Image (cartoon, rainbow, N blue to C red; front, side, top):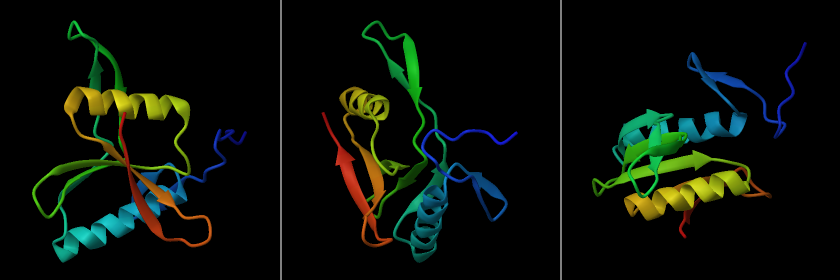
Length: 122
């Protein structure tokens, strides 16, 4: 039986790693090239970030697809998505309010396979 995929994405394998979508694999390839070129460092995948209530208890997690340091040494969290669904938008805004930094949404432009970066802020 074939599993139903909510967003019609295709599981993709690249360099022996499993990606939830072809777009996520494409973004990973682009980020790996940027890392080799020295534009970014410390590239990682699927980093669990706890989202906490006011009393400090963990309510849920934001798991961005990618985490890396940019050329200025700033920590960046990025997610490869076709669009930002309401649950993801809420978690991204919560993370921004909690940590003081936005989550970057990596989207594909409709007319071209070009990468765009968009900060998600409250």
